[in-house]
Length: 454
Ligand SMILES: Nc1ncnc2c1ncn2[C@@H]1O[C@H](COP(=O)(O)OP(=O)(O)OP(=O)(O)O)[C@@H](O)[C@H]1O
Ligand SMILES: [Mg+2]
Image (cartoon, rainbow, N blue to C red; front, side, top):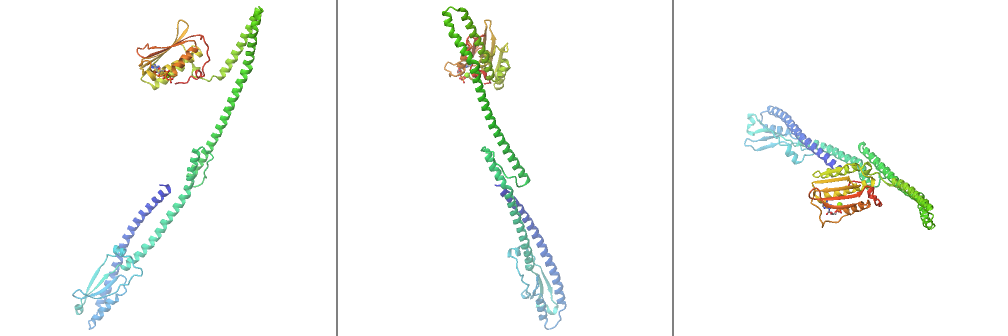
């Protein structure tokens, strides 16, 4: 239910409860008021009747005198007098003044059940006529109460309508900006940070609208900054590429040309037997290659991002094992590595073998132990092994990229990679061995420079 309706229902309930309470109080007061009025009227009536009976003159027209007593009550608002014969039959009765605006029957029924009758004996000379009575009549008093109630009801009803109407109008005005705010949030959610709401209404809401506008402005600023940064980044990348292209062109190009020229002269020089010149040319070629290597190193240094391996192989492998220990606490991971690295290229491949070998062992072998080792051998090689005590290698197993990738990397270093039954009993051992001084220097794949965790 909308907040406005909720509040209106709540206020109406409170007013209704107050109305019921007020009604009960009014009823109680009215009953007391009628009882008091009737009691006062009967007291006055008793005195009047007693005095009139005492004043009766014992003459022949005593019946006439009694009729006048009864008639003297005609037009009274609260009392009715009557003459009742000895056998109980009504002989004469006064008329109560009819109320100008009689109350409805239900109210008369609710309040008017307070009838009191008082009888007066007549003197002996008139006793044969019966007795006189006065009786209270609440019609006029109830009609007065009815007048009061009606007035109060009109006042209360006007008050309630006024309260409800003003609450409705005030809430409508106060909550209208909330609808704007909701529309504003929808626009922001769609990425339109130009959304703004009017900072009007009650102080608390105005504050929220102000904060919303600030938030939208900040988001717009952040987006603008993002666009600018992206532009800058693209420009920087473009500039970086252009610079590398320039460097390659200016630094490597001339030397390649020089190497080409020098190499072309070697054959004619040899045919002419000018061995000294050949030696000079080959020295020149070596010099050019040396220059190129230096420049290439500088360019690669700029291209190579900071990696895990920059902090050493041990650190990178420790991170790798910490990664797996945290995820597979039931598996024991062991590391046997005496040295912190064997050179950048071997370290990168070693790390990749450890990474993929551990991942394979955990993924396919369901082992309880995984042992990693990297050791220098007596015959000038590095021996890398990842062994597990898992279920072992399945010939029909899927062919993935992991093993193939490892083989390629090891081959690039002039080494070999074999899968053998594990040294830990069951399971698989992946053993790679490559020379400390790589025989073949293949191109290092870009992923080697990004030694991220699995
Ligand atoms: N330690 C091991 N224990 C049991 N089986 C293994 C183990 N290592 C590899 N295998 C088997 O050799 C298959 C090939 O492994 P490989 O790493 O090449 O691919 P993969 O792990 O399935 O996928 P991905 O290319 O994503 O690494 C595996 O699917 C698995 O069946
Ligand atoms: Mg794999």
